[in-house]
Length: 118
Image (tube, helix red, strand yellow):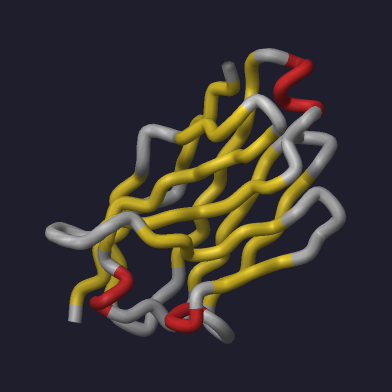
């Protein structure tokens, strides 16, 4: 199993920025097989949704609602993924979860709260 440790959530005013980080540790075989790393979020009363993802080769995918404001990046040496969030809006308020996908399946972080005040 892969352990994912997230950091960087918090409270910010609308228009502000936050940076989320996630580091993977655990089974070396599972870590080496990770292809897709990403961030999901879940707001109260809503389904969990994909925010952004990035492949091992660096191809990225973003939800329409965050395009142009959020940037995902990864460090394949440190087995980490980062989400830079700029121009935050109150509707970005949610619990953000780190996710990695490998041939062994999906692993999830414990989640970090992001709250954007208006």
